[in-house]
Image (cartoon, rainbow over all chains, first blue to last red; front, side, top):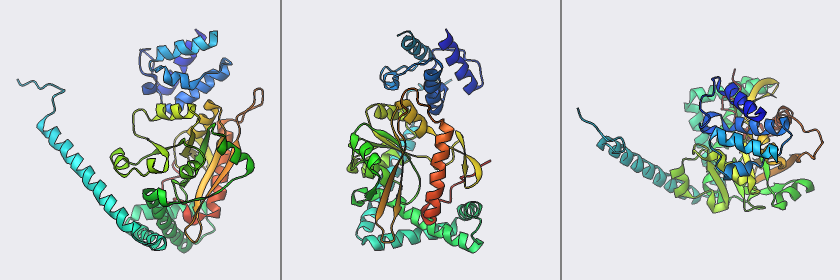
Length: 76
Length: 299
C-alpha cells in the first residue's frame, strides 16, 4: 500500500493534477527523466533492487501494472 | 450530411504525404550528391570549404551570431568584443565541419586517449554511460566507442528518412536511436540492459538539474547520470577535438564507477557539478571548437 501511495504521490507531484486512472500509460504520464528518478527513489525508499530491464521487457506500460511489479519485488 | 471514415485518407492527405515523400527523396538525393562532391576533395580542402561555408552562414544569421558573441562575452569576459566576434566565427566554422563529418564517419579514424582504468571499462564489454559534449567532431565519441564494443549507442536528431538512406551510423557500427521516436527511451533502456555503451550529449540546456557553468547558474540534462545510477554502470566523460592538421582526438575519462553497497553514492547534482566543471575546463582549452551559438544560459 505504501508503495502504491508513493508512486501515485510522485506522479501527482510531477503532473500537478490528481491521478484518476491507474490504467494510464506510465511513460505517457511522466517524462522518461522522471521515470528514472521514480525508480531510483523507490529503490532507496524501500531498499529494493529493481531490474529496470525487466520493467521494459515485460511491457509494464500501465501505472497499475508498474505498481504491482514494484510490490512484487518488495515482497520477494 | 457527409460522414467521412476517419481511417480513410482524404485526397488532400494523400497529396500531402506524396509531396512529403518527394521532398524527403529530393533532400536525400541532394545531400548524397553534395557529400559525393565533398568527398572528391582532399581532407584539407573539404575542411577549408565547409569552415568557410559555416562562417558565411553565421554572417547572414544575425540572431545566431549575436547569441554566440553574447555567450562568449558572458563565459569569457576577459575577451574584447572583437576577439569574441572572431572566436564566434571560428567556432561556427569548426562546428560546421564537425557536423558535416557525420556524413562520412567511415572515413574518420580518431586517435583515442584514456587511462588504464577507463580502457578496462571500454574493453570489458559490460557497458557504460558516457557524458559527452558538442565540441569538435560531435559523433566521434560513439565512433571511438565502436572501436571497442559492438554496442555503441547514441541518440540522434537526424530525421529517420535521411539516416535510412544515408546509413552513416550503421556503416560504422553505431546504433542511433531517434530522439523523436515514440520508443526512444524504452530502446535506450533496453540497450543499457544489454551492456551497451551509451553516449549522450549533455552540455545543452534542459530543465532538469541546476549547474554552475562559467560562474553562472543554469540547468542541464542529467539523464546520463540517472541512467548510470539506474543501470549500475560506470559513468565516463568523453569529448572529441580536432588537432590543427584535422586529425580527430577522442579523450575518455572515468567519472564514477558503480557504488559498492554501503558506500555513500554521490547525488545527481554532485555528479553533474563534476561533469560541468570538466566541460568548462575543456571548453577553455578548446574555445574555438565548442558550439557557442546555442541558447545555453536561459532564465
